[in-house]
Image 1 (spheres, helix red, strand yellow):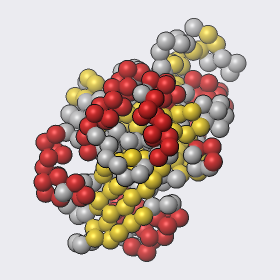
Image 2: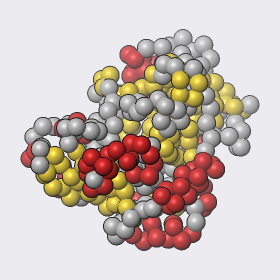
Image 3: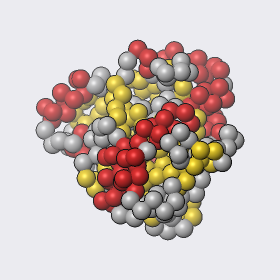
Length: 326
């Protein structure tokens, strides 16, 4: 146990991530966060993932106020791949993903030109079992992956294709926050996304992004993408087979390929996910916890869970891709 310059008691264990900060019996969580805002930001810079335990977040109003206090800017999500509930502008539920299916490791909005620098998670109700927000260090993942795969992804990048319709997955109106096709076209043009309108009010988009980026602060190379999570081979087999039969592979809600358009095969997805598994760490949620992540340097996931789970999410302080992130 050590004490930070701001007088906060830390549990620091270099073998575990996230580090734990104890804020027991704070009384007023919003005032406590306001008082320690700079120290919390520094902690995330130093440790990449910080769990604040004992903050006592019990309702959405307080959690939203904490999210606003910590962030300079809260992001309004665009290009979402799953439905969220909006509690207030910039404060969302976790993605509505089936509890019995895992959400694989990913960096939030790593397929977008603008993505959050930090992720903020407030747990109002912890599940009975499972459902942790697990983390994986992007620099470690890069070093553990096969060198030939890293070289290819670094050279070619990765391609995300999405197909929107009114029958499966999130609609394009939900993803882009508008029912105006001209607004969607303008957004895509300014964010390097190719699009084609399809029959039945459908939309197909594609965007090429780098798979490996450089942290401008440390110079570290980082595995930063959603190549495996948004690939067809990460879907449950029965779901993939059904969707492929009904809509064809080109009509899947999302899929990924190498940046040159070559198929990413099942074995490649398995290698990526197994590498993530080898470096994944997690702590079980407790009611009232706050988890802060550096979204550039730390991927996150959610395993299956049982019981009620309520986690409010904020995407904070956007980064626009520059030469550092190519």
